[in-house]
Length: 198
Figure 1 (cartoon, one colour):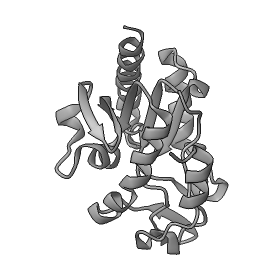
Figure 2: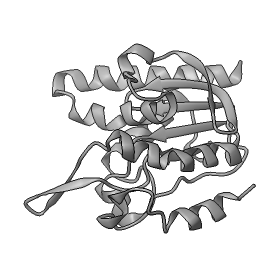
Figure 3: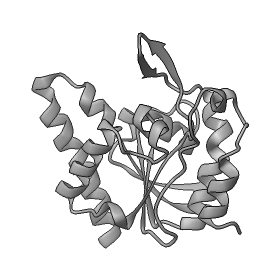
């Protein structure tokens, strides 16, 4: 079985779909084998693509705050994305993210399967629709799965998956709804922490 370092090196030259052509970097997961919790996001954003690390941009700051509020240390989790390259379109000088399509999500699924096989988390949190589609398949809807612990086999990994929103959705929420959306996200992470402790 490959190590995480070997997988990251291999993924750095991935051409399984066309997204690598416009990305600055392959943004692989970070954490250690044996982490009890895996957090799976959707795809790198602008800052992640520039820095080469997952969840270092605005959504990452929301995630860090939610992890603190839910009693989870980020260093205790393996953090990755379902898709490893940033899909974007230019809007003036800004790069605006676009949702990966089903072909792109499935092209990257092998990397997620390999990561989970090496890390061996006792529980995985799928954050957002792209992460859910990578794990559960096409037709996944966050609203239908949110907050539920569901047994999943993904490659050589088998275990419970809890689905929740992606932190970026909280940033997009209207001002008067943002705190409520954040509180719901924290509640889902607390459920994950409690499931691990049970």
